[in-house]
Image 1 (cartoon, each protein chain N blue to C red):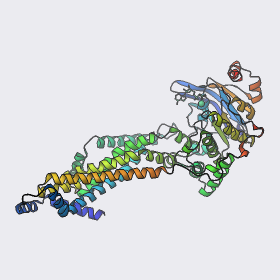
Image 2 (cartoon, helix red, strand yellow; image 1 turned 45 degrees about the horizontal axis):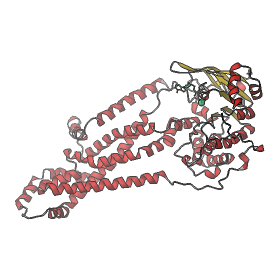
Image 3 (cartoon, chains in turn cyan, orange; image 1 turned 180 degrees about the vertical axis):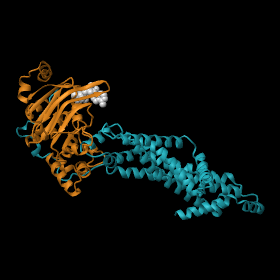
Length: 295
Length: 250
Ligand SMILES: Nc1ncnc2c1ncn2[C@@H]1O[C@H](COP(=O)(O)OP(=O)(O)OP(=O)(O)O)[C@@H](O)[C@H]1O
Ligand SMILES: [Mg+2]
């Protein structure tokens, strides 16, 4: 999978400089009288595979970027919600937590506060110039999407964790579970369920917003469309087609996520293991069960 | 109360707790002996919940000592999680784990905090669920249960840890009246079976009949303490009389 995508990146970089082909096409000349639908058909027939590759890169970046971003966001969100105020916690631990928390806060602010398009330029060209790290455009794109999503997810995760009833944490503490066991077994499962809609939303946003990666020449859907338009000079049909494809992608993703949510909620009902009556053994003899008296 | 400090399961000495500048607990000396059932009564806001939550360190005391078999658990380096496994807690709001079904609610603590094997943990959980009459509901999620059922599961969850003592914070106050009986019945059974219990409650009839000892809290201190018979029949302090009069009138 990754290998093909890397190859795609190379192809994209090549076609970006594809002026010879373009002139050839223009020279061949488009015979007049082609209708809008003729153009659509022509684009699908001759450049359908380019668009499909674009879909592949877009979905790869959006899905992988969202997954990595969620993992990042979970990590950051969990660290930022570690309670640091228990007096018995050792001082170095408290200082480490404060520092980590500050660093992570800066990360979140920087990546939420700057456009992804600018981040792409900085990461792709900046890393190359400053550290001689020359990333493939798809890798660079993935990096940017992941880090960006991570910053948004960090806040979403924090909100998700904080929205879980504090009574849940107290009950877990009361049975002697530590912070991590509580997080893993009790809080995160509930927080993740709570943030699922927001996470799906991030995924859908990423499907659309990976289009800004065309500034570094990542061969995602929008870049492929731009390339085709550069060859055919048929801006309206090309982008209408591209828009339609984006819509199909986002719409079907939204539906799938909704199914997933319903699946995770489990069945609405449960079956009784044996009988539903309260056994007599728990009732006190003499029939005095301390029925509630008014106060 | 006696001098047998080392014999007590849990003992507090001059326990104080402030929220900001507001001192809520003003020096509580209290102990529970093995097998004792102690009820803590008192007006709303007198600090009963705060006291109970301090005992298992859901609130960190401002000063004083909490001794578990004579050792101060507030000492640096003391294994608090381990200590908490020895003290079960039943909350007013049940606080069942919402993501887990009834059985797993009673299993997770055993596995994650005690390191028990899953199979044994399940078996033990089933036993205690049967004891509270909730074994038919093992597959249900908390949101599918009534209040009384939730509280019975919460009791089974605490019992599954096989603690030395159980702390109850107004276990029936959030229940509809018709469900109070089933929970009190379970608790009465536990008291009879010899479990060590500390019960914060407004159910005076229950406190009188089930507990061996009663502590009356007022303004952040234990104002009066004695056998249930003595405190309810002839309270020594004026404040206790006033408080109890409200219930007798009802
Ligand atoms: N986290 C907190 N921060 C500040 N004040 C608090 C906090 N928890 C409790 N208090 C205050 O401490 C006092 C005692 O509260 P507590 O809940 O212990 O009373 P209680 O005796 O359990 O009352 P009730 O019968 O209503 O449950 C109250 O005035 C309450 O406002
Ligand atoms: Mg209370």
